[in-house]
Image 1 (cartoon, one colour):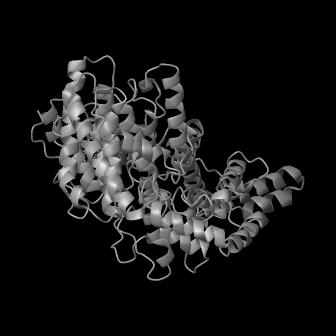
Image 2 (tube, one colour):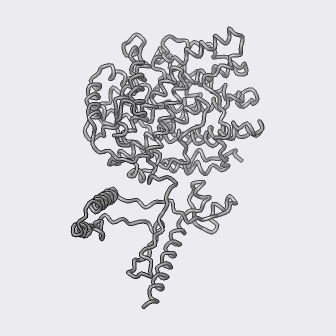
Image 3 (cartoon, one colour):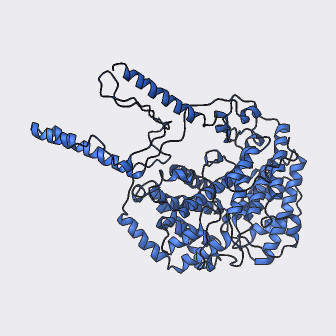
Length: 627
C-alpha cells in the first residue's frame, strides 16, 4: 500500500500536464497576440510564416478565472468569522470555552455548493489531499495574474453601496435645475447645434432621461457638474444680448469647481463614497469643460482637464470589453448600460485624437489597449426630444459615423510616427505622407452614401445640417494639420490644402446663406478657418478667400474668444514686422518617437479593426497604389 500514493500522484500529475498541454495548444503565439490577429496555433502559425517571425508559444494564459460576487462576499464573511474566533480564543483562558469556539468553526465545506468557484485548469493545478504524513497535504500552483496587487483594471478597493446625504441633496438639486428655463434653453442649443460633433462621449437619450428623472434610467448618467458644463457650452453659442450668454462663464466655473472638488476630495468627499459608474459623469464633465476652454483659447487648461478625463476612463476600466465590466463596476449593468458605456468610451477616444491633432500632442487612449467593441445604434426616446434635435424629420444616427471616425483615427495613429519623426529624411517622410493621403482618400471615397460629400456637391448645396456634417470637418482637420508642415517642400501638400480651402469656402457660403449669423457655429469651423489662414500666411498658398476668412473671424456674431485672440495676435505680430506664421495657437505636430508605430504595409489590421467595431472590410483596407 505504501507504493500506491506515489503512483496516484504520478497519475494525477500526468493528467494535469495533459490537461495543461491541451489548454496551451489553444493559446495564440506571442506574435499573434502582439499584432492582435487570430492564431491558427500551427507550428509555426500562418501569421508568423507570412511575416517571417519566430513563432513562440507561452504557457501564461492571460484569461483569469472570474469568481462571482456572491462567492467573494461569502469568502469575506468567512474570513471575518475566523478573525473574530481567533480574537475570542486569544481573550479567553477557559479551556472548555476554547474547545467550544474551535468546534464551532466551519473548517469543512465553508462555501455552499452553488458558490464553489470553478477555477480555470490553466490557472490552478491541484493534487488530491491525502491523510498521510509522508504525502504533502496539497500542492497548488496559483495564477499570479497581473503585476498589480489589485485583481482587475479598476483601482477601486472599497465598494460603497448606500447613497450619502450629499448624494440625496444632489438629486434634489437636479430636480430644481430641470425646471430652470435658462438651463433648458442651453440644453436645447447644445443638442440642436453642437451635438454630436466632438461631443459623442455624451449619449443624449440617457442623459436627458436621467436629468428629467425618468423611470428605468440610472441616476449616475447625469450630475450637477455635467448639467452646468453642458449649459456653459450652450451659452457659448447663444446671442450676446441674452441672459444665457452672460451666465455661461458662471456655469463653467460652477461645473469646474464641483468636479475638481470631487476629484481632489477637497470639501466634497462623494467620490470616495460613490461607485465607479458615478465617475462617468465626471469624465464627460471634464471633456465638456476642456472644449469650452479650447473655444476661449485656454489651451493649457483644456489639455489639463482632458488629461484628467482620459486617466479616469482608464482607472474605471472604461476601455475594457463588457465581459470584464462586471469586475470593474459595482453596479448591475443592463444591456443598455454596456452599450452606453461603449459609446462614452469611443466618444472619448475620438475627443482624445481630436485634441491631439489640435495641440500637436500624442494621444492617451490607444486602440491597442481598447478591447471594448463599438455598439450598434442605441434606441432613441420616441417623444420628448423635439426641443433637443436640429431636424426631427432627419434620421438621427451616430454609430456609423463614429465607427468611421475610429478607423480614421487609427490611420493617423499608424502614420504619425513615420511622418513627423525627425530622424527620418524628408524624402522618406514625404513617402509616408503620400501613403497617408492616399489612405485618407480611400477612406473618404468609401464612406456610405449618406455620409459622402464632394466639392461638386458643396457647390450646389443649399441646406446645411450641422448635426450631421461634423464628419466632414473632422476629415479636413486631420488632412490640413498633417500636410501643413510640408507646404514649403512638397507640391502635393500645397495642392491638397488649396483644394480643401476651396471646399471650406463653399461650406462657409452655405452657412452664411442659410443662417445669416455665426452664433451657433461649431468649434470645428473656427479651427479650420484659422488653419487655412495660417497656411495662406506663408505666401505659399493662394489667398483667394483670405479676406473672407478674416471677416468670418472678425464677425461680431461669432462668440468664440479663440477667433478674437488669433486676430489680435496676428495684428500684434504684423505691427512688430514678424512673420505671422510664427503665431500658432494650434501648436505643431511634433510627436518625437512617441508615435513611432510600425507601418503595416497591407493594412490588414485596419480591416480587423473595422470588423471589431461592426463595419465591413471594404474600403480603408484597399491598398491600390500602396506598396
